[in-house]
Each structure stands twice: as structure tokens, then as C-alpha cells.
Image (cartoon, rainbow, N blue to C red; front, side):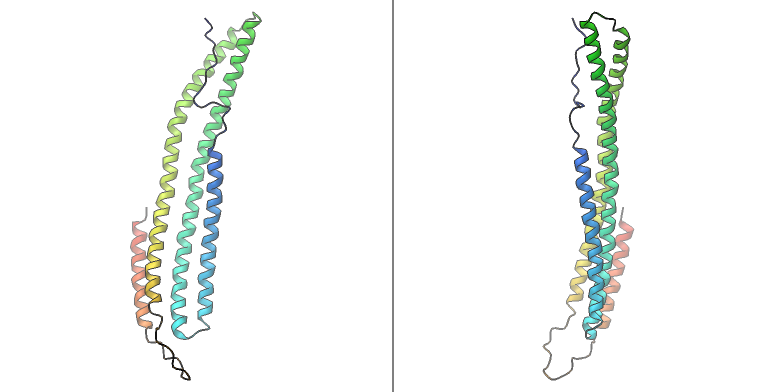
Length: 224
């Protein structure tokens, strides 16, 4: 009975790994997140610039909203960076798979050589021994790959989702206090022919921002 039958691995070398495609999509996502962060920062700064040309009420509120935009930029930029960290683990998975596939390819070549030598009634013992060694190596690599792939993915996704949670909390915080600031924009209809009334809610806006910064510090301390 022929014992040198080609072994079909559950990780066949001819199958193209899809992890490269996942890594590429994460790269695109990280770039988009970086761009969103920069655009958020620019929008906030432009809002502040516009505010300097307006009445003190809008100037004050626009300036404070610009601060929230700046903090959103920092949070979004951090989130984008963690996507890159996640990609590092995907690359490690890809490298491990490529190393496995290289040995699997060597196994198939040796199997073909053994079969070819047997058909020609030529000595094949030396090749057979090498094949046995490669098969043992491949078996261990496959077991390690299954384990490492899961460990690496777990670590990478943990980093990514922790960063997502941080960003979501900061976004929620900025949104909540942004609404408090917007609520301070005067509702009264200006009297035709009269100057706008003086801005008297500056102390309220300052208190809102003070509370915001306190909560932001608490979030920073709670961050993973």
C-alpha cells in the first residue's frame, strides 16, 4: 500500500489568504479616520475665526465650541492610530500564514519527487526522510498557526474596540456639552434699529466649560 499519499491540509497552500484584504481595508479606514480628525480640527478652528467677527455672544460660544472640536480631533486621531496598531497584528497573521504556505509548498514538491522516483524505480529514501521531517514541521506549524491567529486577532481587536469605546465616550461628552453651549445662544428677536444687547451669559458658558473639562479628566482616568 502506498503510504506516500498527498496530504490535503486544512490550510492548503494554494488558497490565497484573505487577511491581506482585511489589512488593506483597515488601512483605508485608518486613513479616512485620520482625514475626519483633521477636517474636524479645521472646522473647529474656522468656527472660532468666524466667531471673532461676530457679536460677543456668538464669539464666546464659537470659541468654546472650537475647543470641543479640538478635543474631538484628538479622540478621532487616537482612534485612527489604534486602527494602525490593529493592522500590525493582521500583518503578523499574514506573515505566519505565508511562512506556513512556504513549508506546505515544500511538502508538495517532496511528495511529487517521491512519487516520481517510485514510478521510475529509483532510490527515494533520502527524499522520503526529508519529506517526513517537513511533514512533522508542517504539522506543528499548523497547530501553532491556529493558536497564534486567534491570539493575535484577539489582541488586535481588543485594542481597536477599546479605542472605539474611548472615542465614543468622548464624542458623547462633546455632543452633550455642545448642546449645552448651543442652548446659550440668545433666542430673543433683536429690536429693529437698536444695537444688540450686551452678552450677559459669559459666566454660564464658562461654568459649562468648567464642568466639561472636569468630566473629560474623569474619562481620561478611566481610559484603558
